[in-house]
Figure 1 (cartoon, rainbow, N blue to C red):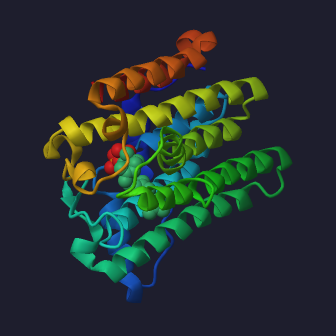
Figure 2 (tube, protein in one colour):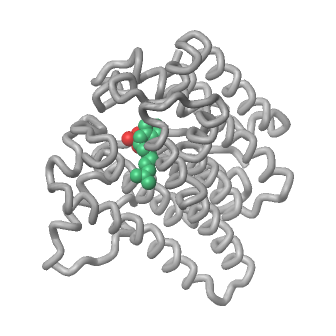
Length: 298
Ligand code: GRG
C-alpha cells in the first residue's frame, strides 16, 4: 500500500487534534483552555504520524486510525506538560511558547496533563464501542490500545522518566543510559508504530520488522535530541538548549562525547532503515522520516 507524505499525515492530525477532547462543562473551561493551549502549540506530531503510517502500511484505513493517533499525541503532550513543571525539569519554554504552568500555574498544568491522559483513553474506548459487534475490528482496537497503555505506563515512558530523574547528578552506566532512552523516549515511539500496525492488521513478520525499526528510531530520536541540546539553537528546538549539562543529565554526548554520539545516531538510523528493507518502496515514509531525524542531529 503506497504511503502518504509526512505533510498529508500531519495535516490530518492538525484537522482532528481537538476532536477527541471530551465535551467539558463550561465551569471547567480553564481546564479545556489549558489542554488546548499545549495541544495546539505546534509539535512535530511524530508519534501520531508514525501511528497513521504504520496502520496504512499494514493495510488499515487511514480514517479509522485517527482517534488512536490523536490519543497518542494527547499522551505525549501530557508528558511534556508534566516534564516542564518545576518539580521535574522546570522549563519555561516549550514548542517555542511559554510552558503550560507558566501560563496557567502549576496546579492547572498538572490537571491539564491528567485531563489529556484520560481524554486519550476516552477517545480509544469510545472508538471501541463503535465496533462492539465486529469481533475482528474490536480485537485490533484492543490490541492497539494495549500497545499505547504499555508504552506510556510504568514499564514504559513513566518508568523512563523515573530513571532519568534518579540518574541526575550521578555517574550513569551505558546500560542504564540505554534503559532510560528505551523507556523514556523509545517506548512511546514503539507504541505508536505497533499500535498502528495492530490497527491495520499486520502479521507477525511485519510487526517484528516494524518493532526493530521503531526501537532503533526511538533511540536515534533521543540521541539526536541530546546532540541538539548541545549544538542546536533555542529557535530551532523551541526550548532552552544547553540545559542537560547544567542539570548534569545522563546523555549520550555526556557519556560518549559528541562525535561518538553522531556516529551512533547514524548507525541506529541505518539499522532502522535496514529493518524495513524487504518492503522496498512501500516503506518510503519510514525511511524518509528516519533520515530527516538523523539530519537534525548531524
Ligand atoms: C512526565 C511521565 C512523564 C514523562 C516525560 C517526554 C518526556 C517524558 C520528557 C520530555 C523531555 C525529553 C527531552 C524527552 C525525550 C523525548 C523527547 C525528545 C520529547 C520531545 O518530543 P518531540 O521532539 O516534541 O517530538 P514535539 O514538541 O515536536 O512534539
